[in-house]
Length: 79
Image 1: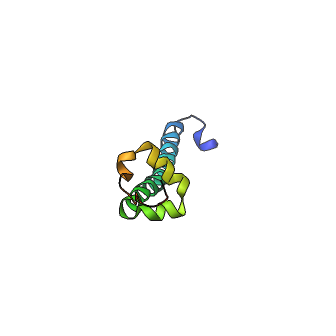
Image 2 (image 1 turned 135 degrees about the horizontal axis):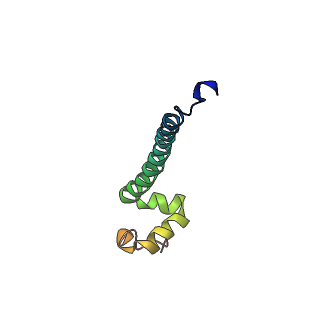
Image 3 (image 1 turned 90 degrees about the horizontal axis):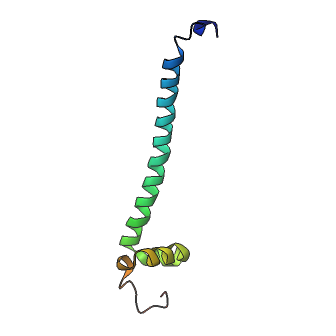
């Protein structure tokens, strides 16, 4: 554009675009972080709900972190 014919606005525009993009990325990342934290809080509060609603995820958690789910309803047929 004509207002940037000398190129003096190029660096500030790139910096501003980078800051805006980084802010948008951080919002998205916070949503993912909140979802992961919520999953583990729900697992700690009531693991049977995860067994009932998402058995594949519970199986992955059980394989990766056996100490977390040790003793959780050991008498049921979930294991």
